[in-house]
Length: 123
Image (cartoon, rainbow, N blue to C red; front, side):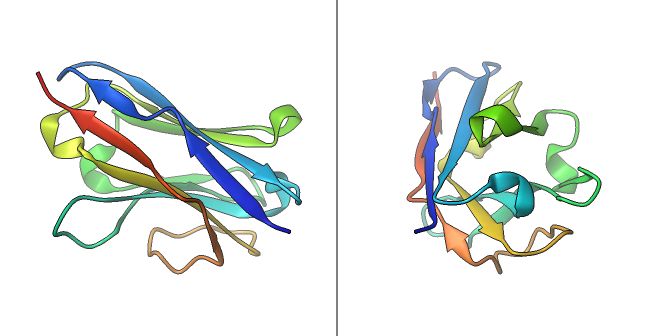
């Protein structure tokens, strides 16, 4: 059974950092494209970043480049999202998702989703 569990969210002050984790169980994450998405209240779910399986290439939402970094840890079957210089507008529920594909994309058209983790950026 494919399962994804996100963790690492919380309350952080503007300018702070968080690292989100997405742990896969029942399958090997290295064989899947993995994406991070977020959804703020009253807004549509938007793509944040993703990482491919074929060459480990990554994509980022244009507005987040330079602040967020996605990475894999094969030994831990985990994908991380390092978020730096956080802003109040980064407040949202963050989801990871996987797809049986070699390349990734930022549209929320993935096969499996985690339950999400809340990130709140506020002073």
